[in-house]
Amino acid sequence: MAQPKKKTSNAKRDQRRATWKRKARVQAEKALALGKSILSGNNTGFYYPQLEAEEEEQAEE
Image (cartoon, rainbow, N blue to C red; front, side):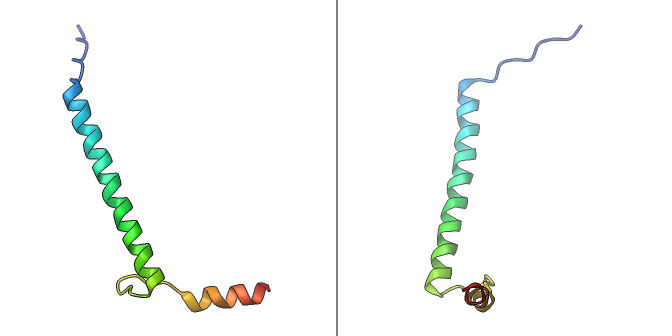
């Protein structure tokens, strides 16, 4: 006969949520750092086609 599953403890639940939130915070920090480097012009490992974007904006006007 099938047995019901045991309830996950609150500590385990909190631990998993903390891990999930930590990963989200790290990704947010990386995205912010990448955005800052692109805006300041100090980016070395990220390709950002600025000339094409500027040409498209001028063509629309």
